Amino acid sequence: MHNPGNAAPERFPAQDRFADGAQFIAGRVTKGTSGRTHAVVDPATGEEVYTYELAGTDDVDAAVAAAREAFPAWAGATPGERSDALHRFAAVVAERAEEFAQAESLQCGKPLKLSREFDVPGTVDNIAFFAGAARHLTGQSAGEYSGDHTSYVRREPIGVVGSVAPWNYPLQMAAWKILPAIAAGNTIVLKPAELTPLTSLLFARAATDAGLPDGVVNIVTGTGKEAGEHLVGHPDVAMTSFTGSTAVGRRVAEIATATVKRLHLELGGKAPLVVFDDADLDAAVNGAVAGALINTGQDCTAATRAYVQRPLYEAFVERTAALMETVRLGDPFAAGTDLGPLVSHAQRDRVAGFVDRARAYARVVTGGEAPRGDLANGAYYRPTLIADAPQDSEVVQSEIFGPVLVVLPFDTDDEGLALADDTPYGLAASAWTRDLYRANRATREIKAGCVWINDHIPIISEMPHGGYRASGFGKDMSAYSFEEYTQIKHVMFDNTAVARKDWHRTIFGDR
Image (tube, rainbow, N blue to C red; front, side):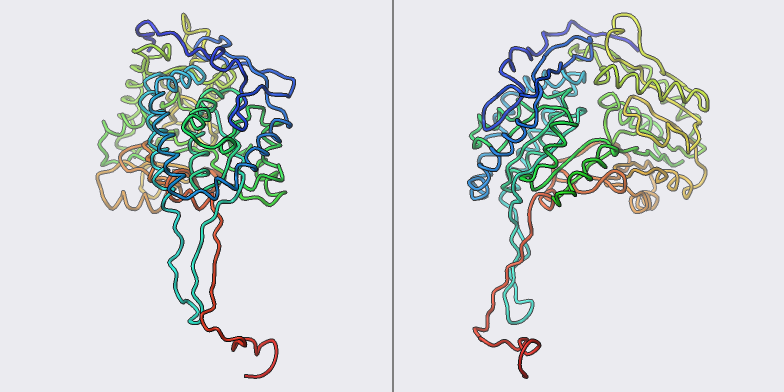
């Protein structure tokens, strides 16, 4: 459905706000030195809204040097001092919420209501969570585990973190990378996607305005091949955290392991939504459409494969298609818009390619095309439902990253759960049932980092986010993220004051 909604407000003035450049190093905005420029394009109109100089390797070196210089003082700050700084940071971002929301919608094409109600509040909440968590970097309690010694565990920051974030949730991904790292006492250099650098730059500026020391948070905006690979392989970077596709994650791992640095990967997904025959059908249909179309389907946890038990299958297909057809495509800044464009025309064409190839072996129930008329210049694609595709087909096995849901039937519970697990990925999943035993079985047997019951998509700062198998390893958010961003040190004290220990006899002398 096309409904452009009401007149849209003026778009975020990116060219004016970032006239000094798209790099943020040691507390200052600078221009990149690669000698090449890049344009941020509003995907709703196809218009260039900001042109900037890309970062080169020299910029990465400068950012890493700034982070390295800032590290000793920041690591030596008390947990309370880091916590206070993060509380101030949360307040600054909250004060600038509308600016962040408009910049996010401009560069990504996501509806302003999504940026205002999901991306920005979620980020503020994440900062507030880590402000509190900074005071709780605890280790194992002290104890005399050997009898003659007292042992305890220290958590210590690792050093300079070099992180690479994707384009689908630029603000939230910047927060997920930066916050646990700096709360634990590390400093960081973040490379956002060159398509969507605006809110990462606003985020770093807000950190400095909140009083975080220069060099604690740095941003380099360049290509993955040049700036990203140089950052990941930099000898002064002690840890790399990457969110993106599994294919690129393999390359990141190859570079990072060559320098034996800590590695955290949050990669692709192909989340199943399993609907058992006792499920609330209306709830499952609403959940499937919302879970499949959030952020125009550009979400690694989005519902992409709906497995529906045979008695509900035809009704599910019919109702899901009907609900998808009510979703209003339009200007992301217009009040009546439900779904914006994809992030770029290249991404729109990639999604369209998956759907067009699927016509040879499956049924496109609704959607399957780009809208015409006044949306034709944007990277729009209609919400699409595909039915009856084979389990081994491309649209079932590969990450499409667009507003496309594939629906397949199953007969027995065993079959449904087996099909849900039958991809290389394991990031997220959901199961829909009124039966407690079915629900518990699904949470046990589906191999995914998050399994929702009777819902799909919600995340909270207190709980970890990360996957199994080809979806990567390690956790974002929650106190579990400190396991990624801290070194664990065992400290042991002798309690006997005896010069010659009994165990020394294994090396010299008798008892």
